[in-house]
Length: 85
Image (cartoon, rainbow, N blue to C red):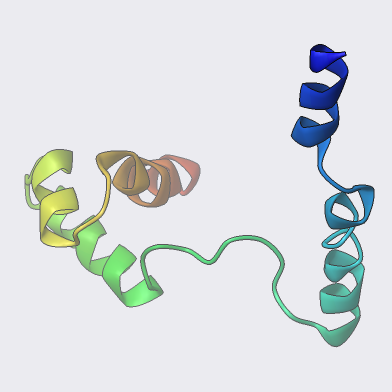
């Protein structure tokens, strides 16, 4: 009996689970971007690319822009590799 009550509490209400499911299509119809916004603005990405090209390491660049080094790798290094650089 205790296990059943814990399971019911863990699942919560069914309506709360479905609350955000219609947001994506509505935003898409309005032409709004979907997903989480980028941490770095395009101007910051360009500056980070210049810093990387001038020899700064990824951790230093991440410190300058107050973000995680994985963000720099995703936005700077992968972009450069995709562009052939």
